[in-house]
Length: 264
Image (tube, rainbow, N blue to C red; front, side):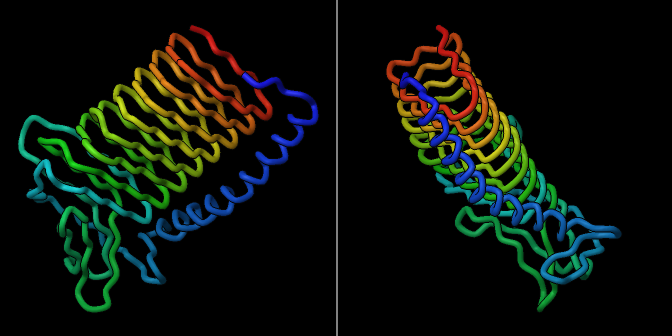
């Protein structure tokens, strides 16, 4: 591990705040989205008042070769494995009752409306009886959970503000996570390359097998427990890094303000 001198610590501290300034701008956009879409007596979307709420449920008719893509302005998204049939359940906020429709096109969840009516998806639950080829989920603001879904190729998760929980997703080749603000939990999978970019919030990594782990944190603690990592590259601005009960073969850790613990 590189030694930290007062000058180098100051440079890292300055660089950390430069990174945080950029992330804060993105976070303000995400929080602006959340504030705009959720208001008294309903939701707002692109200047339209969505005061009608309806639940939509259907068989997504997907198979294990799907390249799944979910994109929401704001809301809670859960993608979980089930033993029974696959099902999608979503809460939709509409300007005109019954004007919205949800369906998949080539693995991409599409929300359509009649004419110029506006609508948005709030909570979304996708229950799958099988794995997927790849998965991309992008939320402006909101919580995200992926649990028990085997992903074979790429897994990309992004949220401006909100917690992310990723558990038992098999062995995707690549996992990329971008999070403006919120806590992160990663547990029980293996991958060749895990890239994590955190603005503000704690990260808990547990029981992972990773070839290359790159983690960049602005403000918040990083905990790595019971993991096997070939190459760990960590850049922490403000916060502690704690590695315990893990096999880390090579590492490069650049810490700004905070302690670093590398225990076996």
